Amino acid sequence: MSGIKKLAGQTLWYGVSSIAARFIGYLLVPLLTYSEYVSPADFGRQSLLYSAIPVLSILFTYGFETAYFRFSSQEAYKKTIYSTSFISIVISTILLSGLLWILRAPFSALIGFADIPQIAIITIGIIGIDTLNKIPFAKLRQEERPIKYAFVNIAGIFVNLVLTWFFINYCPRSLASDPGSWTGNFFSFSTNPIVYVVLANLIQSAITLLLLSKEILSVRLTFDTKLWKEMMVYALPLLIVGFGGIINETFDRLMLKAWLPGTDIFKNEQVGIYNACYKLSILITLFVQAFRMGAEPFFFKQAAGQEPQKIYARVLKFFVIVLSIMFLVVSLFLPIWSHLIGPAYRSAIGIVPILLLANIFLGIYYNLSIWFKLTGKTTAGSYITLIGTAITIVINFIFIPYFGFIASAWATFCCYGTMMLISYNWGQKAYPVPYPAKKIIAYLTIAVLVYLLHKTISIYVVDFWWQTISGAILLIGYLLFVARIEKKELEKIFLWQKT
Image (cartoon, rainbow, N blue to C red; front, side):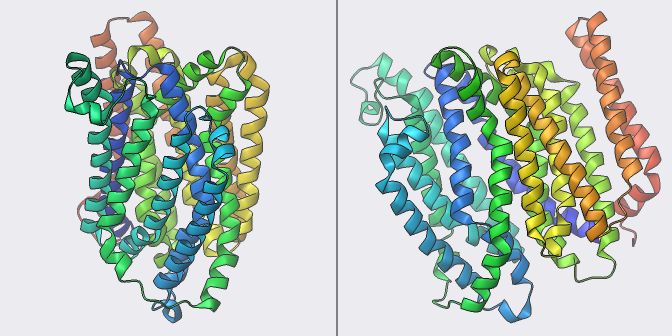
């Protein structure tokens, strides 16, 4: 089986489970945005909270997940890598969680919930438990155990969805119709709805940890100090990469709240509207996440084979083809996708194509970043990410007061586009890979032109069904065009010929 087929198989097993889990998680968006109990301002506050949580998660894991994949392929460390990684994470999680507990009052103020201190306590629990789940999940991926991985991942998210529906939809209606209802034991109208959202998340994290108990109990009390030091040297620059990546991905919500003029309620509403529309880049985000799940361990394993660069090049080409198709699937049918969010959140629908392209750039960057992970030059990733972070902050700072969330969307676009270009140019000097750059640029450019053509048609053809039909025709045309150009390659893959 060829390298691409093998990656496709891993992406199918591990990635599809992530897609399913993330898709179930995305169902929270219509659940919350259509809820009468959750206002746009409440949804905005929740968005801000979930922009801060990933930052702390990066600190808690400090790059050890990627380091685990890096060193688990080395024969000398195969017996000690899992125990060493997990013990390190457990000790650091206890210390950092304890520190946050001591500082929970300023922590509550930092995440914007000084008026609801219980949210900070629940959040600390979520971060701590999720951190403990990281290495067991990495072990499942490394050992290629997709069924267990998929079951645990999807089960946890499903529990979250059900509990959120219970707290946000069922309980308010039940209590409103019958003040003596048993749901009064769990729910109160006087409690901010975001408390119930994060409580559902905490229960999900705990159940996930319980489902991973077999992997956790398999940890031996063996700690390889030499391995740990090597992992730390490798991982610490990735901590900066992680911080920068999270800032680029989620801090635009916090910057909107900080730099947008107006009242706090208005700011929270704008953050909620922006975050809801950001979720409409669901297909791109899910596929990139799925790809990363399969690609990270795959790339490290391929590095020991013959001519891995050719495999990396072909992977990127097909990756871009898939993403360009997904871009059109969303952008050509935005009126349909918009129903995933409530009517009060659709005023930012025009930023979705910009965010789709931005996430395509991010996906390409993840592919390109293999050069500094394989060569051990992880500090390069730090520099690239810091440049992206600077771009994000500067553009948001200058333009948010004038253009609001539109500035945040373009900042994301410029950030990821710049990181992609820098990584490509730098990587080609340090670890040359024969990427088909002209083809990749052509596929993306044509996809954007198809979208712009459809947008122009939609100005003159206002009927919804004719807009949808024209979008379908343009999408089919693009698919046929790609199929014709890549006919030989596609035949090799789908006919299972040796490549």
